[in-house]
Length: 309
Image (cartoon, one colour):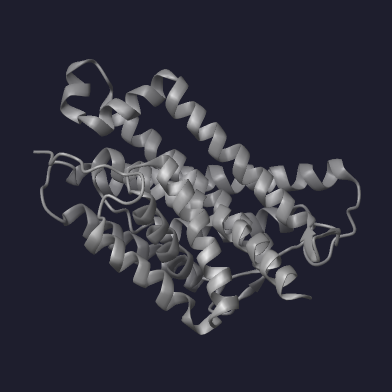
């Protein structure tokens, strides 16, 4: 490949990673926008989702290199796996909110955030004890189809990842901006007490935020498995920290900012690895996190929120 083609290939790879980080970052930003809580359990909700997606694909008999070549069985199998992973993660997110966080909602300070760290470790160890410490090969039902693009190669899996992520992000945007419940979420994010006085069911809004954010983490988890062809009990922290950086960069609390931040971090990861060295990518990404927190804590598209009493 020429230097131009290599750069283009890394941009393609970065967009695929960025789509995954964006979906995962939205979960952080939805919860923070309403509760001003960093949900560290989100890291391992994502990890659990990757295992659920893997088991869903294995349930369909799609382990290893499948010979599914026609469109309907392939897309039907993927749709089933995405629905199962998203529903499982969504229900898990609701359970975390209902049983671990709701009883602490009136407690001030960092109690809620510390609780999410504890929940995260519970999920981490449950999967470790259940599935074992070795990495698992991910079922790969997609045929090896690819097309040349300016000297680079674009694969079917990348087109599917982009399409699925775009549909989910546009769907979320329309839900938040056009539906009654979405408007209630925006009102609660601005001022929960005022929204409650206007008749908004804040508990329902919080549950919806946890369900949607966790469901998108399930979609991101399946994208991770299809992209890297493996999963492990360790993936939550590596991908989760980068997605958290994306949320902070875009402006935590801003759904659009989370999308933009995810794409930027995905491109930084691939281009940084190509132009500098792969071993420096984490240094670059987390340096961005520190610099944003120090010099622009509201991020690219966020706004300084008033302190809630």
